[in-house]
Every structure is written in C-alpha cells, then in structure tokens.
Length: 265
Ligand SMILES: C[S@@+](CC[C@H](N)C(=O)[O-])C[C@H]1O[C@@H](n2cnc3c(N)ncnc32)[C@H](O)[C@@H]1O
Image (cartoon, rainbow, N blue to C red; front, top):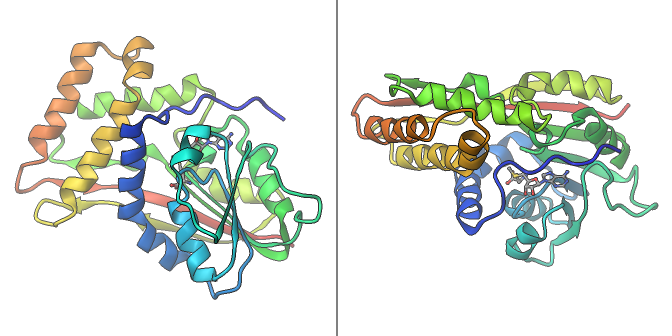
C-alpha cells in the first residue's frame, strides 16, 4: 500500500470549524442524493468529523463504520451510539475479516483528492461491499470554480492552491475521474451527477459559501506561500479581493461537487 499523503488542510480547530460549516452547507443535498432506504450497513471512508456519517447512520437507522486517520479529527468527531469510528488509513482500512464484502454501501467524500493512489482506495471500497452493494464517491474538481464578476487576483491564488495538490502527489481534478476510478477498481458505474455548491449575493447562505472558500485557501497558506507557489503579497491581495467581491450585489459563486456511483458485480 502507498504511504499516505500529508493532509493539506490540517486539523486545527479553525479548519475543523470550516469542515463543519461545509457539512452544514452540503449534507442535506448529499443525503437526498444518497436516497437511503433504511437498514443499510454503511462504511464511510475518510469520515473526518463524522457529521455526514451520522446523518447517513440516522437515515439508515443502523450503526455505521467510519474510518479516519487523524486522532485530532476523531477527538472532535460526532459521538453517537450509531457511530463505530475507527482510526486507520483508507488505503488499508481497519475492517474485520467477517466485515469485508458485507456492507451495502461504501461512501467517500473529499478523500480521494487527498490520497496518492485513489484507485487503491476505491478497490478497498469495492471489496468492502457485498455483490450488488453500492460504492458512492463524492469529490472536488477544482477547475469548475467560477466567480463572477471575477475578483482580481483570486483565480491566480486558486491556481496556486491547485498546485499544492500536485506537490503532494494528489489530483486537484479528481472529480472528472470518479467514474473511471470505479471502473478501474472493478465496480460497474451506474450514475454520475453534480451537487450544486454555490449561491449568489442576496441568498442568505451566500456569505457562508464565501467563508468556506476563503477558509479552504487560508488553510493551505503554508503550502502556497512557504512552498514558493505565490508570494505572500499576492496571496493576501487575492484573499482581500475575495472579501471586497463578496459584498457586491451582483456576485455569483458557481461550483459543483462531482458524484459517481457504482455497484459491485
Ligand atoms: C476534507 S475531509 C472530509 C471529511 C468527511 N468525509 C466530510 O465530507 O466531511 C478529509 C478527511 O480525510 C482524512 N484523511 C486524509 N487522508 C486519509 C487517509 N489516507 N486515510 C484516512 N483518512 C484520511 C483527513 O484527516 C480528513 O479528516
């Protein structure tokens, strides 16, 4: 198994707050797309603070296994009798011998973008589910971000942010590969879609989308500036331009989360 990449965003309390905000913005739509029927045995790969895991477990009405590498994330994660959270790496998930091949659903959100060998992880997900079981992948493809009118300098900052993934041996454009990863890992792809992630000025949740975007980039400041991808002044200017843009009455934020689903033959 490959050694895991450093997790770009880290696990500081500020970053954990941002991840929670992201969950608040996204989980309702994610649960809608998942269309759980109840009773599913679920394993969540790279569960983070386990907020979506808990949402899934509640709908399924059944104990869910969550796998997360970071002690800091697990220490701040949701606690509930419906959650069986285990510390471990998604490339070598800590499942018992009698659990492999038994799950109805293996799910992963925003994790394949942080590993160096995503197909190895999807293979483990396919192996975890029963024949006919579902494998659901949700991830980023950072190329689809559009802010309009464009805040000057922000997209330069965004491109530098994308390069931090390359430096870690990860793929900032993994979203477009999700169906192909399912196929390569031995699942039969059955569905692809996008979850819209955006808003415009005038929508109550617009500031939260901007806050999340600023937080994502800010959490990678070290990798961007210390890594020599962008000067500190350009970094600061890009973030400031985002703040100025955010109060425009015509500001629009367009982004989408890539979603692909397959079944184990
Ligand atoms: C962006 S968060 C997403 C968390 C959760 N899936 C969600 O959507 O809220 C990515 C998580 O993956 C964890 N992680 C990164 N690499 C991992 C690995 N190789 N094995 C297990 N967890 C990993 C990080 O610690 C982090 O908590």
